[in-house]
Length: 499
Image 1: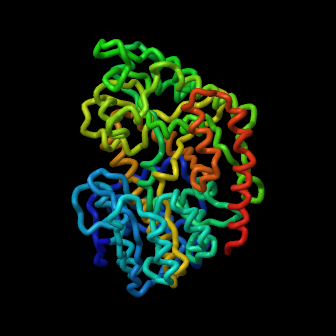
Image 2: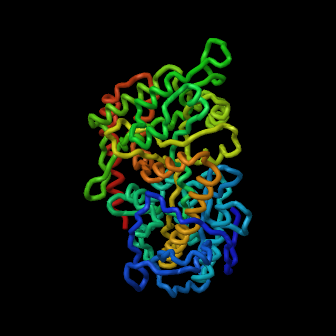
Image 3: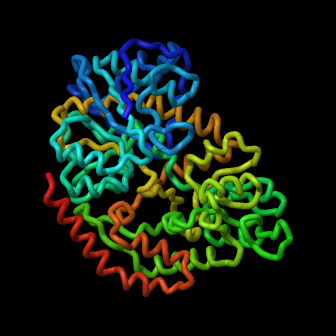
């Protein structure tokens, strides 16, 4: 592992970060100061704000105004993103480089470490996908090595079950009512009122993991198809519309009489992402009861209809080609899309960044709804890609850790968030204003899956069934229901036994 230390000092960043508030945030959320009255206070000294920004009222973190952390060294472990690879951005920065995420990170850290007198010790794990075993080994050895860690959701269950994590609801100095915390994701992650992970603007780049539907503008125009942006805005971007637009896009480009990786399809997609259509259609497999306990919802009449329709779409001959057909799987899918071999491409939002240099003109959409009666579009983030903040149970400085996470998250709302949304996604990666509007929709209704995270079994069963030769979903659900329910009950019992 490599340690990167930031020396605390005052920086005035001569660049205005526009304050773009996403629709996912509560615009009227109260913010209780450490000793005050649910009000916002003027603070024009914030990093990234110009002297002209004098009328904006800045919400302050839930810490005392005069908080002095006396040089506290905040140690945070994370998987570093390098060269466009998957990982975590926006945590640490040694200097300004011209990259908007890096420079917003640098400005934020310099401002808050000077104002509250603490240091940030960013510790990067030099392996792809920081494993739970690394954290567990440290915690079970009783080593207070890290104050906080950023880790992928799929690693959480092992750490929770092993009692290696702190319940965020017991951490002083945090105010999850602040708009810099993603309450929707956190509410989806909690069980029995226990919150062992946090998500918000401090790790806003984790939104790269959300699934989107890209489309090839030239192919759309050449085939005289409807404007998908208008369909989304009118609430008419449905599975039926997606099917009608994509079913006739296939073509044997090389004329060899067979369809393979050299030809064109309606949809390019990773096989393991087919279940994203289910979440886009509002079928989340589980929900929560009044006691914040997970409830298995798969098996309703609507869910069967949704799964059947998705299966019918994906099972249409030559409509879709999966990553497994290519030598380099997901990487080759991107190449195929750039070579105009797919009308639609279901991938993570980070693909927009990877496609920046591509000459292929593309647009961004949410996954389609089931039908027009469905109220919202949804964007799913799987546990293999989404990252969260955790606090190891060996932490001996919970108050300082809570205060610093609150401070960093609050300042990220004014620096990292606009850098990510306005200057990176909208300023560099998307190709048109319509896609920017689509991003608002994608980021407004985010879904994760406890079944996916904990491996209860229904998520994988439905995923496999959607790409199988059989469409008997009622039998699949009936086969797995008891087993899944037993797994849910076991997880609930463990949560109820934890502090």
